Every structure is written in structure tokens, then in C-alpha cells.
Image (cartoon, rainbow, N blue to C red; front, side):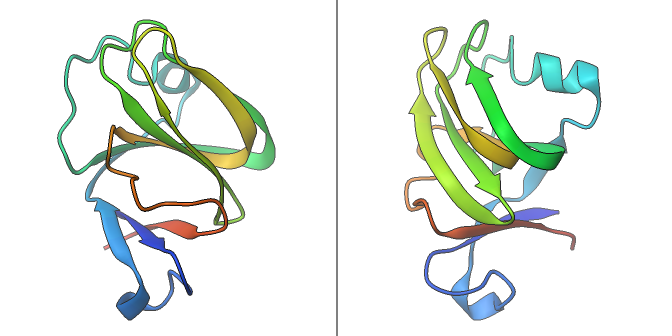
Amino acid sequence: MRLVHAADGSVASPDDRTTLATQIDLADSLLAQTRGLMFRRSLPEDFALAFRFGNASTRDVHMLFVFVPLDVIWVADGVVQRVEQLRPWRGFARDRADTILELPAGAAAGVEPGDEVALIDD
């Protein structure tokens, strides 16, 4: 699985997309969603943690017990709603999303609201 990004165009077109991460973990249980990246001391450069929800709603991200800075992307229907770099222990942000993606700080540097992102099965 890969996380891909398209700034101007569709993520469906391989020519218009860039890969943000190739090592994807899915937070697919309540326990995994609650824990998130808490207690992790480092992350691989090509890593992303994906939280998938059944519907778009206001979703919070906190950095309590998270020891590394993160880039967080809120996505609704494949379209980026917000991108925020959050600091360890102190960061908090919320926005509307059906998917939240957490990446190492700097990994989402070129991602802007209105862009498209998608998880692609290889």
C-alpha cells in the first residue's frame, strides 16, 4: 500500500502523483486509533499511520505522549481539508475528515488544502 498525492489533477493518473509514504499502518481498531503514535520515539521516513472513519465528521488529533513531531492531513472524500505540523506533547488540531493521515514532520511539505490524496493498494 502507498499514500499518493496529486496537487493539480487526479490521484488516479500515475503521471500526476507523488508518493508520500510506502510503509502504511492502518489504525483499524478502537485500540489502535486510541493509541495512534503515542510512545513512539522515531518513525521511518516513508511511514504513515492512516485512520479511516465511516463518514466525514470533525476529528481531533492530540500529541499527548507523542515524542516526535508529525505532519497531519485531514481528508474528506479524497480531498485534503487541512495540513498541520504538530509539536510533540503540545500539539492539538481538529478539522472535518473521513480519513486522517499522520506522517513524520516534513513528509507532507508539498500538500495543501484542495489537493487529492489516496491510499493505493499495490
